[in-house]
Length: 316
Image (cartoon, rainbow, N blue to C red; front, side, top):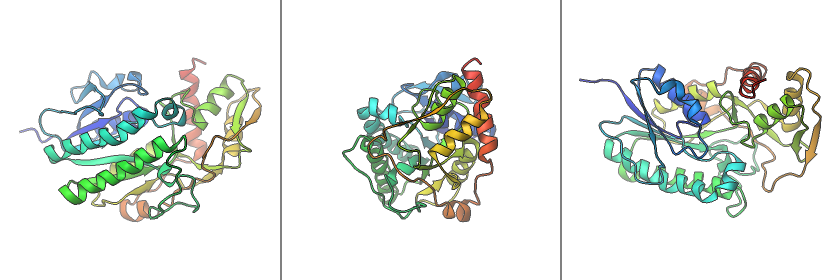
């Protein structure tokens, strides 16, 4: 009798999905990774491919999903996740959040599996409350350029709760705040990969607006720990996982520039994209109280690891 727990991770070749796959393999799970590779990268999971406990499916979860045998957990992390991606792929973004979530909740029901969905701080939109607690309903423009991502995630939460309440499915919802670390794509359009690659290449560092908008950056290892704890908890309402240490985007650019020794880059300012959130900071009271979780890796340490990854990735 095989007592090994089986987990399906969608978006497994992506930044977060690949780190989660590593964690579950380490914990002794059999991991089924699924990705259609529109933003994922096989290089992120190459090291897992020879393992007996890892099986990869090249598949789009917006289409019917089948996994043979028993399944204990499903982690739904498939989705374009940076503005550059979801502006380029608005319909796929909506479909993976709606049809993909529906397909996976159906699979969870059929397999009697517990499902955790990757929601986002973007459900709060451009918030009128700072920090953002889980009870805040958000300030989202449903028809703005970011609406495709924000509303896909909001729908995903609503559908997940409907399956939980109507079918009694075991579900968990994590609201992920800005996360960074190795395996981020250089060209994904997010602030830190852009700053690091520009500074390493001695190009101008582009800051949108006057750089006074804030973000809270959480190191990927901390985030994975929070998600792992949430999955195994009994809590079914959304939980913020992120680092409450809030800094301005300009400050982040300056910290990156100071870290990249010998860079001749200068900081330049460009127009602020439409509906770009002015503040972003998680209230992590619930994560602390329910999961006993809080971030451990400070920015100095996390930025250094990320810088070394980008140097290597860029062949410097």
